[in-house]
Structures are given as structure tokens and as C-alpha cells.
Length: 294
Image (cartoon, rainbow, N blue to C red):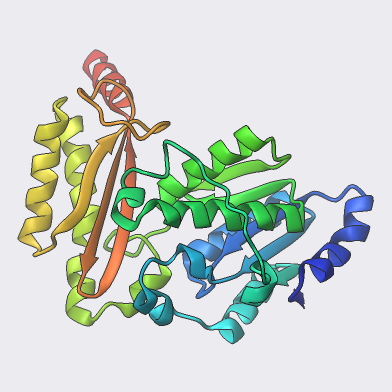
């Protein structure tokens, strides 16, 4: 595996393979690798001739200086894990490579940047995400890029950016990898105390409450949401938000008749966590109907 620090070096490292028609896959990350990251790398390894992983803690997308300072960093460990996953190139640039003096360009995706995470963290958060991912796409020139479903709003925003700006890259959204109790894997989980780690499982349980409510025939999003909020409250977790929205535009749903995306964000102790679950009520109805015919 080759470790590169500059965009010029990254492009040079891929030039021969690109000329030879190799399929290049990119996995953008902020490091502190866990099983979720590794699943994306393995998927890229299975799909592509060349696998590039970027490791860059993007300071622009943090709205709290303390959060940026506390974000886990373990490049030495990450290098070993990336090698084991079969990564070909690890792109780990310094901040001034991605944001050189005089940097003055922002990519902004309207409509998806202002709600949910955008409302909680400020629109600049997603402006920073879109800008750095656009730069990574231009630097690596991948044929396909891999993102996790855990960051559902981010994934949707990247898909919209790629469509609107005609980036020649295929976006693959891969399933959320979870701990045994359902907690979505995240680099931030390492910051949870033992008691907070126990309470953090309530995020996934709240989403499961929504899924079970819909499976039981509940079609009122307010009623399903109320049950999920009760689950969080029982664990002593106060959410920033828990919403049921359309999967493609993140608009609030008035009635659960088609696929719905349930999203939750909450601070557990000093650590802010997010999770989501896609719910398919039509599949549930069809399954129940098929069972009835049996």
C-alpha cells in the first residue's frame, strides 16, 4: 500500500492504472477506522481494480472546536487496517493541502443542507462536506465512491451533488454496520463512557420501535414517533431530533403509505450520535398478505 500526502502525488500514483482502463474506487473517511469503514473498503476491493482510501479529518465540518480537538485520530493503526483490507493507496493530506492559503470556494447543496443535521449543526456543516468530497473526487477521479447508510443525509446530499454537477462517478451506499446491541458503528463511539455506551443503544431501539409500530399497522407518523421518543426517554436520552421523512428529499411525511426514513440524533453524555433506518410499509403489507394466503 502506498501512502501519499499531496494531490499531485495521488494523481501520479493512479496515472498508469487509469491509462490502462483500471476501475478506481474511492472510500472517503476521517480515519479512526472501525468495522463500518472496513466493510466499505472490502466492498471497493471486490468491485474495483484499484482502491483509494482518503483519511482527512475535515476541520471545516466541525461546528465546535472541542469536538474537532476530541475527534479520535490513529493514523498508525489505520494504516495497518487499510493494508489488511487490501487498500492500494491511502491519501492522508495535511490541512493546507486541502485548504491552501486563499482557499475561497464552497460547494453548497440547497434543500438538503438546511434540515435535520443542517438545522442542528448549521448549514456550513454540509457545505464543508460537499466541498471536501468534491475536491476528493477531483483529486482521485474515481469511477465509484463508497459511503455508509449511517450518514443517510450526507449520502443523499452527495448523490444530489454528483447529479447536479455531472461528476463522472457512481455512488454506492452500503449498509450500516452495527454493534451487537444495534448501536451504529462510529468513530465517536470510542468517546462514550461505560454508562453512556449502555444508554447509546436506545438510539437504535427507538428506530426499531418505529419499524415495529409500522409493521403492526400504524400509519400515523406522529403516533409512531411518540412511541420512539418514549423509548429514548426511558433511557434518559434527549434527542436533537427524531423524524420520519421521505427517503429522497427528507420531507416530513403526513402518513406512512410508502417508504419512510426514520432518523435520530442525540447527545449521549458528551458525544453526539446519529442513526437511521429505512422502513418499507408496502413490503410489510405484502408479506402479511402472503402469509394470510398461506
